[in-house]
Length: 184
Image 1: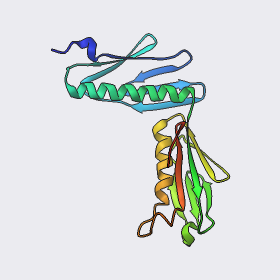
Image 2 (image 1 turned 90 degrees about the vertical axis):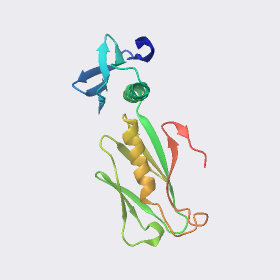
Image 3 (image 1 turned 135 degrees about the vertical axis):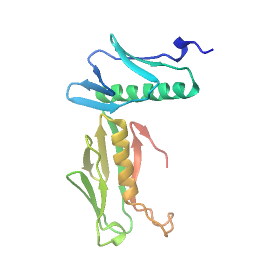
Image 4 (image 1 turned 90 degrees about the horizontal axis):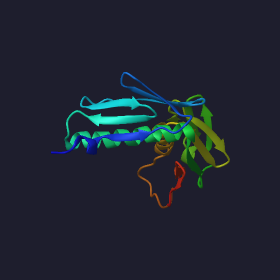
C-alpha cells in the first residue's frame, strides 16, 4: 500500500507572491502581474496551508500521482511567471522576398510572405505583449503557456508546403524559449 505522505506534494510560495484558491481556480499575483488557471481533478484536493499550496490525493493510484506532479509544475510555472515574465524570441527570416510584419490589435499581420498578395494572420493570445525590434519579435507574458502558444502561432502562420525547405527558408522561427536558446 502506498503511503499518503509519499503522494502529497507541497509547493512553497515565496515572499511577495499572493496565492488565492477560489472554487477550482488558482490565482497567483505579484504587483501588476497575475496568472489564473482552473485546475480540477475529482480525486485531487488543492488547498492552501500557510504560505504553501498542498496537493493531496483521495485515492493512491498512478493516475493521481501523474495529475499531482503535473499540477505542481503548472503552479510552479505560475509562481515563476509572476516573479519574472517569460520571454520568447522569434526571428524574421526573409531571403527571397522582403517581408513586412506588423502587430494590429490581437493579430500579427505578415505581408508579402514569399510574394503572396494576401497577408497571413497569426493570433496573439490574451495577456501577452508582443514587440517587434528589427528582425526579432519579442513575446513576454507571466503565463508561460500563453507566451509559448503565441510563438507557436507565429511560426505556424508562415509554414509552407510543397517547396524544398533547404531552399525556401523564409518564415518566422522561434530562436529562444523562456530563456533557453534553441539550436537549429
